[in-house]
Every structure is written in C-alpha cells, then in structure tokens.
Length: 318
Image (cartoon, rainbow, N blue to C red):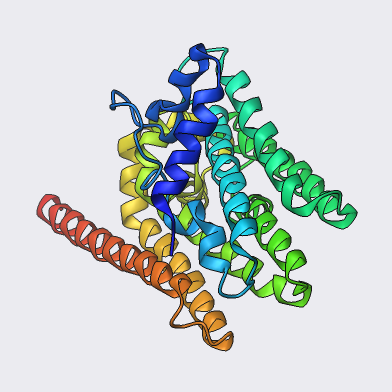
C-alpha cells in the first residue's frame, strides 16, 4: 500500500519546511514541477506524476521485500529524485519560470535525495559506481536531446529517441538496484529495468504524438516532424521552411501518429509478456500498464477518426 499521507508529510513538513522561505514557493510551483501554468500551489504530491514512476519503491516491494524502515527512506529519496528528474527535463525544454533560484532548489533536491539513499545503502561501492554512471549517461542523453530537438543539429529519429530513453530510464533503475542489493536479488534486476525502459519509451512516443503541435510552436522538432520530413523526402535543413499546416497535412496523410501509437502499444505488449513470465500479472505494475495501454488505444481511435475526417474533407475538394 502506498502511504500517500506520510509521503506528503515528508515532502511538505520535512523537506519544504526546511528550505529557505524564498525557495519554498518554488517547491510548490506547478509551473516548475509539471509545466502547469497559472495553477494553485501544490498541496499534495499525489497525482503530480504517474504513480508507476512517482511511487516506484512501493510497487516493487513485493519483488524486493525490504523492511518498512528501508522502504520509507527509499520512498522519500525517490520522491525528491523523480521531482528533480522531471524539473531538469522542464529546464532543458525551457518550460520553467525565468528564475535563477530554480538551480538552487534543484541542488537541494539532489543533495537530500543522495543523503537519504546513503542512509540505507551506506558506502556500497558498486551501488554508487552505478549511480554516478547513470547520472553521467543521463546528462549526455539530455544534451543529445537539446542538440537534436531544440538546436536542430541532427534529426531526432526513432533510433536517437531510443538511445535517449535507454539512458533516461536507467535513472529509474536506481530504485531497482538499491532494493535488489538490500535483498540480495541482483539477478532479478534486469527484467524490471526492461519493464521501465520499455514503458518510458512507449510513454514518450505517446506524449510526442499528442504534443507535436505545441512542440513545433516552441521550435522543437520531435519525432512526428522528423518522420514527416523523411517520408516526404524533404531534407532536414529545410524543416524550418514548412508551416504547422504543412506538417499537419503530411502527418495525417502518412498516419504518422498512428504509427507512433502502434509502436507504443507494441512496447506495452512486450512488457505484459515479461510480467507474465515473472508471474506478476496480479501486481500493481500490471494495473498501471493496463492504464497506459488504455490511453494508447484511445489515442489510436482518435487519430484514426481524425484521419478519416481529413480524408473526407480532401475528397470534397478534389
């Protein structure tokens, strides 16, 4: 069971309350934490992000049965680390308020998260070597995304996207590694790493499909844009010469959003098969997976309907 109230108490009464008052506003700013403008200050972390990410330790404890004290500390450490992760992504995407204090809040999140992990894992050399390797790879992946998506120096292809999300999902593996080491189940790490790697890539495919217009308006060339250029044999350096309407036509004509959604569903189906092999179909992981599959299937129906409507409109003008 996820202790929502206890984790809220930790975040607001322990972590936020001990920040300087000029940083406390940032710690409850939904624009900063989830790119939600003009929203009321955060009063609970429940619902801040998808539960399968935000509350990972509590979903994995059935497979890595650590004691309650260890679970509590890891749960606290992870809350801070996942907020830091999402906030870093928002900073890179230039989707945060213009405030230099954000970097100081960012440092508080990272420092206290590391302290809490140290509290349960100590100086375990193998864990910390893995931890810093993951952070190194994550920084490189974030740089690659900016280079492709924002600076337009290289097309953000599916291969590039996969490379980036392999590194990003490795951050989720921090929880898996620490819990596996505490329970001496190192040989069970890989299946759960694969679970989160595939889930993270599939979720981003859905997000990029749904948000491509907003991304394009912000000057970000995500996968739908790159695929539209590729299928039309248009050079990437000509991407800026096309309008949003041009991309809408190409994306609809070639069913690009459906293709991306189909890829996401394929990832989810692979994960479902993995859970079946782990005899975990009754677990919370499967419940959250089903929720994501429902979202993908709904998106597919919506994109198909849009495609049919556009086709009908085109037939009227021919």
